[in-house]
Image (cartoon, rainbow, N blue to C red):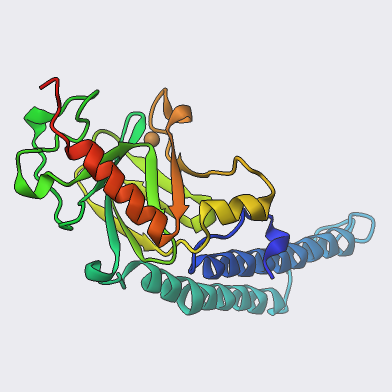
Length: 265
Ligand SMILES: [Cu+2]
């Protein structure tokens, strides 16, 4: 129904509502454009100089234009209070229970996305600023903390299971970044000093999307949607949506890989 907008493919359960909202606003803007454009053209012709060589100092007596203005304001109020605010409330205020969701901490930095999974114990390990190392430990994760031993961190690679609520806790190390995945119809600023949760349910795996788009190299891309510095253009991450089994396997393999004792330490 909203294909005429030319939006990217849809890959989340709530995305249709966002697309519907965008469509509604476009239709309303089209009506306004035609209406005001028509009125403008009418005024140009009706009050042309050859018909009115001398200005009419009394002006317009009818109240039609005031009624039109009020009508437009009423429709705008309906759009805002009837559609936009309820949709915002449903998307932002009501979070799924953490026990039924996968929680990932995503920390933006100039110019990369750091993903942090709590691992099998579902508890995030302690992070410590003194352990922070841009190459080997960009989040300063303390591997000696029992809760941190099974944690997983990746850079620019976000793996997610399909059809499961995902809670992303967005943070930033330096400046304002923005986590945007167009196919999920998700976009949120990451603000230094704040942890901002967002949630969505991806419902199309990367493999399915490759068949659907006919592009064997298709990748969901996290685009940083705030101009965050000179390297902003290369601040892109990738999301791989997998089946529950594939994701479980990735989780186990990566945990084994990352929690193995580091021979160089
Ligand atoms: Cu950025």
